[in-house]
Image (cartoon, rainbow, N blue to C red; front, side):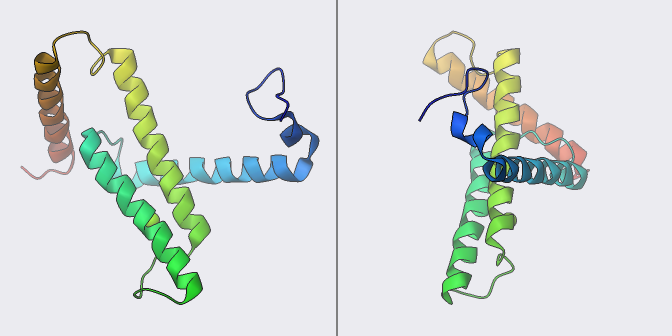
Length: 139
Ligand SMILES: [Mg+2]
């Protein structure tokens, strides 16, 4: 596969309008879903383990939608495979946004001993948890 000089995407993508349209449509739908998530939950920040639970739940819904198509599994609302894949991509995007922010702010990537990094992570997780509880007005 040859690469376009201005991009890391394969050059073939740019020579085929249909493929370009597919890429643009999916990316647009992910962006719209990110907006919907932000409207619903606010600007989310979670401990990485919590994000992994959210992402895995969405991946599970992809599997449920695939099962529905085969007539397998239990009854579920997750019956639109395309929509569920967009959810996975949007949650992964939200995690990537946080990771990038952490990297820029050096929240997780400061040099130090493993023990100090663990303490720093725990403090960060506590702080994020506190922020999320305050947002949801749980106390
Ligand atoms: Mg979903």
